[in-house]
Length: 341
Image 1 (cartoon, rainbow, N blue to C red):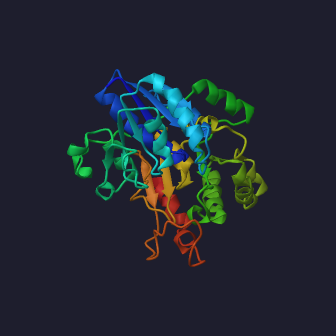
Image 2 (cartoon, rainbow, N blue to C red; image 1 turned 90 degrees about the vertical axis):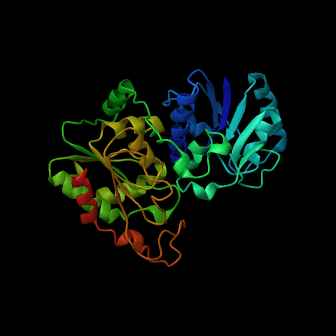
Image 3 (cartoon, one colour; image 1 turned 120 degrees about the vertical axis):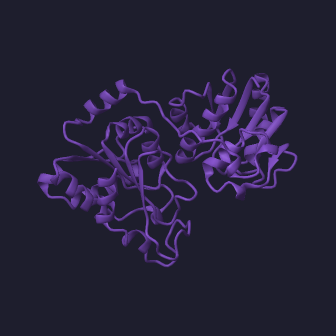
């Protein structure tokens, strides 16, 4: 095996988890050239994965079929003479580029009936409950992978930290680590049914600051209103120790700052997976989703969730309109989990 193409996932958290596959592949084939095709926003993450030899931008959007453009992309990649492609998304369109590139072995899960498009088609997805197990199973021959029990120990993602960028962004945002830093990641691109209430986050922030620490609130520009709401619950004295950095950093700057935190509390989100992959002690808050499918991959994690009967529902909005899976998850529970890290 000399050259491999991975068609990577589009979500940040899934991209982080896919590093376990790349590590597994390089353990088996140390001299392999590993290329990963992914959307533009994921390319900076791939640059932090030393196993990836080349990141290739996928120029087509999530819902964009555009057969002609996929044909052209495939023909451009044909010169790389890949021995195998592994397709991580489940869609039919994601499997077309390796076909058009003439890659002889095309591996992936059945997904959208990809018979013929993939010629190494795996059908027993349910035998691998975790997403990371499904990724890593594709690194091995189909005849050896009957269930998750057949997998060797899965290596956890380990994103590289750029200490120079870390220092520069701390200076730009006037952040210091003189006091213990708690990172909060209160957003979730998926939807409201993943977001622990702002008031609960604020209660944890108040207690951390009263104990002599600083709080950094992470997120995208979309998360700025949530971050401001959390800060608004604090007294003016406490607000001096609560720094809103949502929307002020690139993805890799946020990565480097998460690595500088002493502990992190996060919803089930891309930033949760990044915090786990840089090794920061983490409390992961689960609402409508489940750690039985996409847990944070780290040794130093406390997962908190309610045992309410209607979860996990995996819905973006609460179908019952009460969000009890999150509102009834108390700040005290999260505080105890922080103390246990």
